[in-house]
Image 1 (cartoon, rainbow, N blue to C red):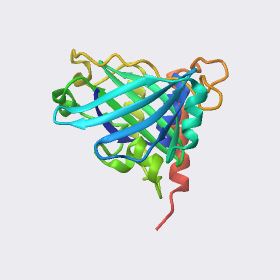
Image 2 (image 1 turned 120 degrees about the vertical axis):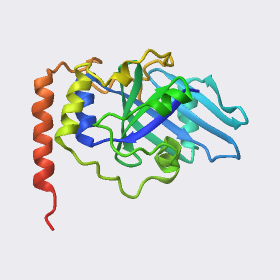
Image 3 (image 1 turned 30 degrees about the horizontal axis):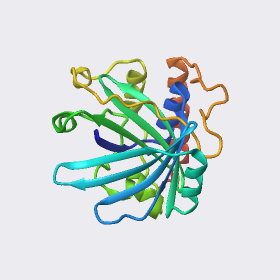
Length: 232
């Protein structure tokens, strides 16, 4: 399994990345944890998997078995909890970032970066548009969200540095550390929904917008955030 670091991000940042790159819906249903074993069902476009994750002295291992979609829906009905989210796969130099808009059981926006080794994970410097890191916090994992929910989503503020960093990312400009040659995991783009599999957009393609559109939209979002901010 690839090593991951996970961060909160602003809802406005997530929305603008999705507008630029498109999204795919996914659903995961989790069974109660049994010791060092985690079992859950994952639905994506026209495919479904029953996944068993185990922890041992050599780290985590994953066993993934494809199951018929109707069987997966039946399993979801008996799961202890579900998480429904829209995902965007975003390259950051040689790394792969997964931007998730969690829609159920709570509203939350996260970015997860995958690494090929522990050294790469430790050396990675988060970009300015990343919010607080939540790696290792069980309540921000898909399992934690599905089984326990989240009483209140943390607020991730916007800033000029956030906007500039996001524009650079979408324009394929990164700090030197993100261009280091590495061997990233070859993960496929996850796609699908529980009820109607496929891209969240009607055409199945990402909406074409310019970086000027992104900057203008971000500026509007920042203005709204400032006007809606309560005064002391």
